[in-house]
Length: 452
Ligand SMILES: Cc1ncc(COP(=O)(O)O)c(C=O)c1O
Image 1 (tube, rainbow, N blue to C red):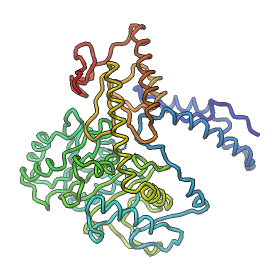
Image 2 (cartoon, rainbow, N blue to C red):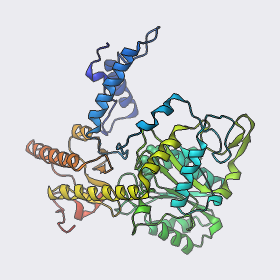
Image 3 (cartoon, rainbow, N blue to C red):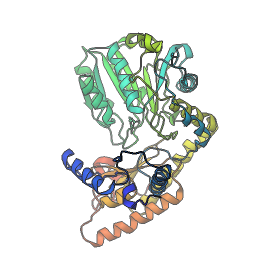
Image 4 (cartoon, protein in one colour):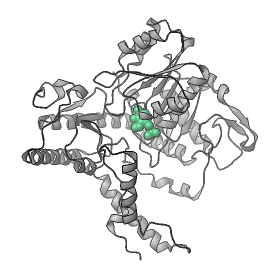
């Protein structure tokens, strides 16, 4: 039986401290060399099953420990897909158009279409009006949605708020599209006054709008209805704009909240995407993309080799992902999903109150499960709780795997650490008023408002 030193199994976790790309690479590489001797693939002969089992068992134990404090990133870890284990005996591949099938018979396209139909109903588009596929995640959904838009409007300008996910700016670079970065409000949602000014100054070109149905850091929801009104006010007719909705996390949550913004193809929107591994919890990255069927011909090509039509970004596509998504939806049902959405939001409110009661600056948008607060002073603490941070703020994304006990332990440790940092004399609560508003800031100038 192989003896594996503990440090060897640690995932490569880095802090968000500002290092150059080269410095980070050097850091990671040096750590890897020190700790990966048992993982390195160096032997000429194959490894024994017992040794491989030992490595994996140890890795699972380590990951389990990390999972107890996994608060910052939107990956729901509350799932059990053991029933699908028999599927690991097959390579399943959905290359091609899910609605046409393919000549590779080990595909799961019937599950894929069933999942797509479910989302089409959720976002209110008729079966014969939509096209879609299961992607590798939200980024691929954005890549596809914006590609469809660009095919419609080759000279279109991409408008998106400064709070958009980094994939949007990357896509603009990849597609060499002109991109206008629009300012956002404190909530993180797009500033429609600024959007209006930008639209008016580029009235001669079609508008491709990327809307955040939940920004990554603050969970701000772009006001789709106001954006549509703004386009109208600026004189953009329906044949002069395309709206892509990046609903990575909230795209599946908002439909279960009565008062929230409605994502609906009955409105003049053109594509919607979500990540499957975020709210729904899938063990590997995946996502859903739905667009209007009428756009698809423009980017499809028939491919004899797979006896299908090529309209997706990648070629080979996971055949397991659609079944994981199908299982996640079937197992919960609409009522299960609705309860889960409300539970996450209730627990997020609980965390907000705990932080604020402890005098820690924090904010939570309406209909959101992303609690934003002052960035912990110590990067080690941030890493310990796997928090995501940016400049002066950090966040917790409250998903189903995050229990009240986890939140209590986190807040308790945060309070303890804060008093230690204060004693050391280096620490003052940072001013986060420009990120979350003065009423949510606990710095020495702004006193946290108690009216919440
Ligand atoms: C708003 C938004 N869009 C897109 C993405 C990218 O999704 P993925 O990581 O599934 O590619 C994220 C991820 O956090 C996101 O928050």
